[in-house]
Amino acid sequence: MRIPRSVVWMFSVGLMVLGAGAVFGQNYPNKPIRIVTAAPGSNNDWGARLVAQELTPRVGQQVIVENRPSVINVETVANAPPDGYTLLFLGPTVWLLPFLRDDVSWDPLRDFSPITLAVTSPNAVVVHPSLPVKSVKELIALAKARPGELNYGAAALGSTPHLAAELFNALAGVNIVRVPYRGTGPAMIALIAGEVQVQFPGLGSVAAHIKSGKVRALAVTSSQPSALAPGLPTVAASGVPGYESTSILGIFAPAKTPATVIDLLNQEIVRVLHKADVKKRFFSSGAQAVGNSPEEFLATIKSEMARWGKVIKDAGIRGRGD
Image 1 (tube, rainbow, N blue to C red):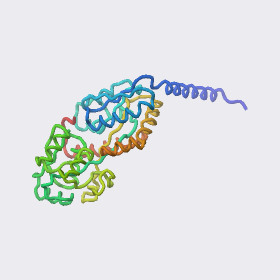
Image 2: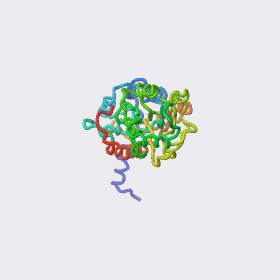
Image 3: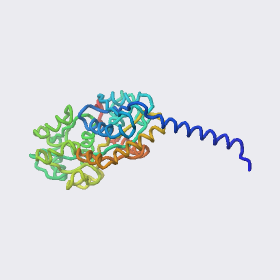
Image 4: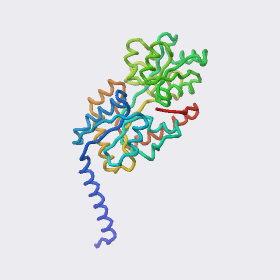
């Protein structure tokens, strides 16, 4: 039986394409890879350095971390050559800042190739010990009895702690007023000092203060109880049905990075995130390592944009989100 010439030609082209992809994969990486992230000392920085340290021996090249200020870090990767040598380790700034500001230069769906969701972490609802509440229901009752009198501290506009608080206001029907601070640290100091009464910080950043009794924890913001905070109920189960807020950090490459490179990076980074010792180190910092497919991470980003975009719009939140 003779095979038509057109079929032979298509088969040959297919082999050439596969061969080219294999050669590209074999040649990558042949120089150091940089992971761009946020300021030194941040959760982004710590997570990026842990991944870089574990990834270096797996890819046979040095993986270095480069700290850049907010917005600049995202723009750096969006404008980098799509060759797999410049990656981004960051969270909601990538996909939510366009809802907050008109001067954002990137589109989260157009300008990036998602690699994997790296880690997730719930926030906690915490109050100053002097506040006469020991549950979310009691906090809601007090806030309704004293509308506009209770304050919460939050750092960056549009950050997870800020949006978690605004979602709480909306779903619980209360008005706890935001007091802005220049960073998570100053906001926490203000809560401990009693300058504000409520806060929705990342669990990792407040765990030690909960343990010492400097603040009182009422609930976690995840949809399910968290192993990171044994014994704490969820906000949803404490009288605010439908409430959920979880901080997520992911890894991106510039758009149009070859699929072979994205696949290789995904496989190796996911292997790193699934290592028992890596999971343990993230867990001890108040986060859970994930590691999933680019498609699953993209679906999560789209879901986050739809849900939080509405919260931002309904609350009228506009301005600088960095």
